[in-house]
Length: 271
Image (cartoon, rainbow, N blue to C red; front, side, top):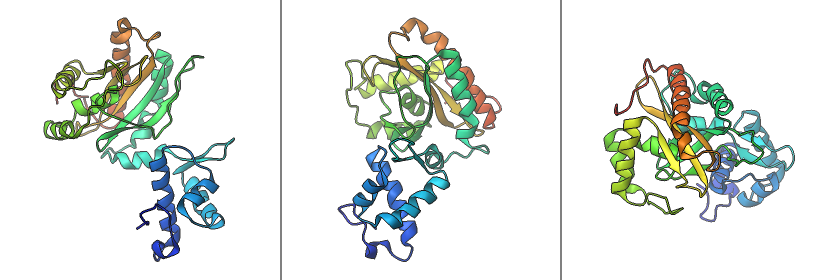
């Protein structure tokens, strides 16, 4: 166990120091939520830079860390997030959705994310960036709250009722924009609409000026394991465009569901 100050000591590493350091690296990057250079990681953990270098290279070789070619900073990759999503699908979720994420981006022109729920937060698992010159960017591994994001609403709406109520009871409904839903009663009504129509909307509730449309992905058990989310600026996603984007998101999400073994993706009001 690491000391309370977050720095690693040789005594704290126990009989498997390389494993301990590898896990400490992953935990540090998850806490910081930003890329860090090798020297920054070594300083934060209080370990020798030369021995840490071998750990970092191993994690990168195995695909758990990525390294920016310019800054040389390390960041978590979707491979680790895919393990954390813990879906019971026969085919890996990330691989099953890869083509659909990019095809949906090409069909709509907007950024598309593959989102999953980990505990009481949402996590971006994969991203296909918009090719518009004016665009927002989101990195894999980005975490978000559930009540104000379209992907989060999908995760809540299609969770089993007891789990949904447990999650709702524990959420802090932070107001991020004037449109954020901060009433549990209003959020429950919103989730009922999501289940009824089969998709969720973010009407600039999470980030001012950004709108999203998300559709659920189901596995072979009929469980909602992810969401495909279309994201773009309000100037390119007027409310009049919501129905067409929803149809596209649902169609591509259904294709991923079939790849995951869902014989027939559940329709609206099926949860």
